[in-house]
Length: 615
Image 1 (cartoon, rainbow, N blue to C red):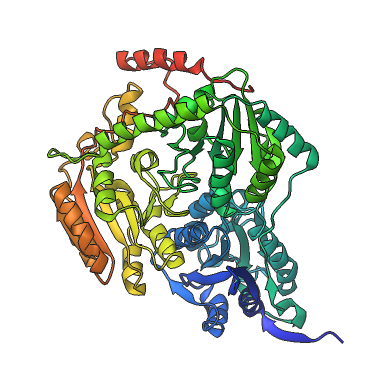
Image 2 (cartoon, rainbow, N blue to C red; image 1 turned 180 degrees about the vertical axis):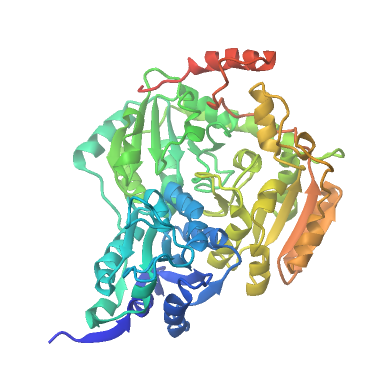
């Protein structure tokens, strides 16, 4: 007779999570590092009681905002290179829906997180319950259906035994390198508390290893033949390099074959910034060195990247008409974009086998020398824009001040506004995963919460969060969580009094100044926000500085401070780095009463001719 254990649905779920393991650096660790929870009537009695029962094995953390706690879980998964992850549980209704934005972040960024929102009663007896959404034409619909398009796997648990196949499928998705992304298991409130005789085998310990897909022989042979014929090859390193832990393999491959490397936002820090073959950022926010090579390259080896528009300059960057893209990726959807030759494989294994089959192939020295000369020229431009100034500083100058004060051996995190573009170009990352940008969804409000996740994953490193005033105002509540948990961050808050990045884009597309900076809004008075006082009210150490020199001084002090510090500095909303970069497709109106828009439209139509759609 099969041995069974009688548990409620949520007790079984919690116990199951404690039994999922992985091995990192030879040490067995739980796959789930904890659960973020904000309890309400839809999960406190069921899920809350179950989590209390396993609190010594699976810690539960309390946050202040449901979206924010999910951002923390996402950042943790990214910083651990998808080897470990977290779960998030909320009540029904607004608590659940607050996580949908974060689910989209995880979906776009291909990161694992388990969402466990409360749901309606499966038996429907008390309908409509508090916070229930009613669809007049669909009795099966609930608010949690909003998770469907932003989940890799979605299930609604309406009977206790449904948990068994659902959790099995959930783990397969969460740990699969190709399908990895968010999983949502909507938990009906009554079912959370129902008991079932679960087979004991369901709770057996299981170790999830990182699957390394080996390339198909014919795809490998075609990629090798293409590279051997290349005179001007380049590598684009995406986030897959980091998730595969292939940084040293990438360095060896590039050095052996003399191929220069450019990095996406997700792939930055794959190589040290000053590696002799690292050309830095590529695309819209790229360096002149990397983008010059991309324009001329005859073969682009795109490793672990989904080739989004910022990477490809809206598909206008790769100008060589005879170019070939090789898509080395675990996911065929990404590997075949824009008629690329697919090489479906794990990044590390794929590079190893490519290198072995390439043998003594080496890029022509004139191409490698051109790359090196281009990077030297770029560094002069970068040093100039990050140099200190006596006037109201730019974002780039603040970045330079942070780098000079704290060096390269820190981890930096950002997400939205103008800062990501400047950091992509200018930040000099050192070790793998020391640079953490959420730029797939570029979600405002990710920064403070994400910093907690990064610090939990990298407790021995100094984590510096750079955030603009607009993003900070959207979601700053997790400052209090950081202080409460003793998770120390250094937060540099750049105040340009509004949405500086978008007002610059508005101007560039011919638009009038309108509704972005505080001064350009409908208002009776302009807010004078004391961000330092606000941060102190949430428990942080905080100060406002008036110069880059003072910023450097305060940054150095944070190394010895016991808790999270917030340093505020005013910045110029109009200055951005003109060096480097590439055109980005932002549609300009065909018809307008503004001459500025008409002029911008003419430039836009000229630029559109450079796009190579379907080529």
